[in-house]
Length: 354
Image (cartoon, rainbow, N blue to C red; front, side, top):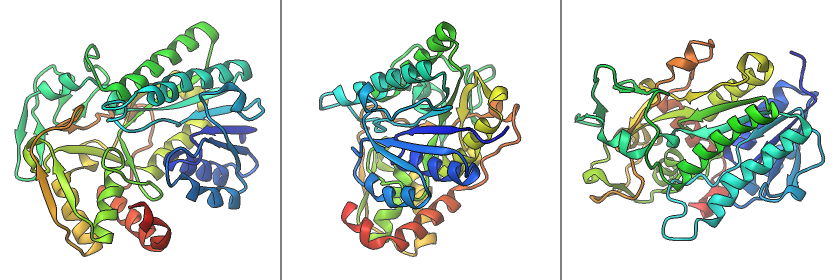
């Protein structure tokens, strides 16, 4: 297709949003790319000079409020604004989580309806219910937990498929994203909205501000680089819980393809993840950080699980791979190395955030 006339990226100064804005502007240099962000998450302000230098318009606004969207219409809306922490809303008011992740999606869909925008929604693997994932048989290996293969099950050693049972709790964060997926389907059926939904695994890479509850790879690199202690939390404190990962550049490549061939992708909803091949336990991630960064840090153990935690998550992306030649190309060591290079190059600005 020819370059789209305009793209609005919500959460466009955040980790994923800014990365997408920069890639899309580079791929479609004649396209008007606008990043909308409320700068709520600390560190997102560091992306503003990068956006400006690339010729990307920045609008400070909040998707919770219809009057804070930039003037449209836009040919595409890419919805990647969110409160991303799976622990959000527990031990405090869930107002911001609900208003941003659910009502914010509604506001974006309303703009898409009015502008007749094509929409790409970045959902999460956290839509899958916790109890369903936790009760699947597993085995403890020397460095990680692994799922067992059970004939006919929607979960295997290779990951979770989209056929997984969905009728159980999934965390407040996961519910807001699952509800947003459902709302998108209502807009597709009721208003003819043209939309794509990507259920992303753990996205990681440079420019992510890692925290204990979100951004584990960046957190691990930060702590190793600056010599700060870490902690294995839950599941006996062994660090054997596993996640599959997706380099931010890989998801940017996929979204670029989806924009370029949108008619092929319209209506897609499914897993986008690194799967077993691009996965690591915390223990394995520690070893990779030690190898890449050349430093060890003290790591304590906390035996008790946190609320909404998971022993294992791996996405089976077979359904995705059956419709595209796109594959995630960057492994866990490459993710760690790229984050390390970024931290080293921006040490002065990042140190106060650790």
